[in-house]
Image (cartoon, rainbow, N blue to C red; front, side):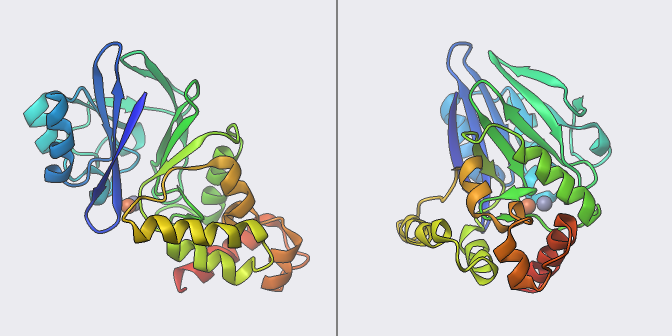
Length: 252
Ligand code: ZN
Ligand code: FE
């Protein structure tokens, strides 16, 4: 399984998945036709389009790509009326194949009502859309804080060496937020240099691993005593800490 990262719009990422044995080409969250087609056209085909959620910056190129390559579009059954050109409706825990690759649907509402992640368990790769970012999480637009918290916990249960491919390059501003409320975290400080180096040379900071995220992403660390202390929420539950952090991040 080869994953090619395609920067789109100002800070989106689309991903081409190439499975060699059966020559199957797929794309995750194609937002911009030209940028995506530049990569896809090298393969001369596009079998599948996978959408994590219905937002325009994740489905923007669906119809043009489908028209040009006769691709099949896969998305959440909950978004059957909102994902342009959708062909295959996916539900929680469903297993699906693209060529020889098998992935599992993880239902992770919060950012939107129908948000899903694609988890390739054999390859240990997850596409998390706008739910889990590197060092951050998505805004809660359609769901509740509790839904988002539960969705992040589902992802947290995947193997720690799972590579996380998310929907946006938000890592630097997420890092600044993490540092503000988790200032004693040495691993977090260590990441700063690495992130800056990548960004300075125009490289994506993606993918990270789930294990790294669990140690440095503040939204996955809501039970940490130092973070609770920094927020003045010493005796609060994890969900209360999460809600506070999500609100603070909205205006950070
Ligand atoms: Zn979104
Ligand atoms: Fe987005």
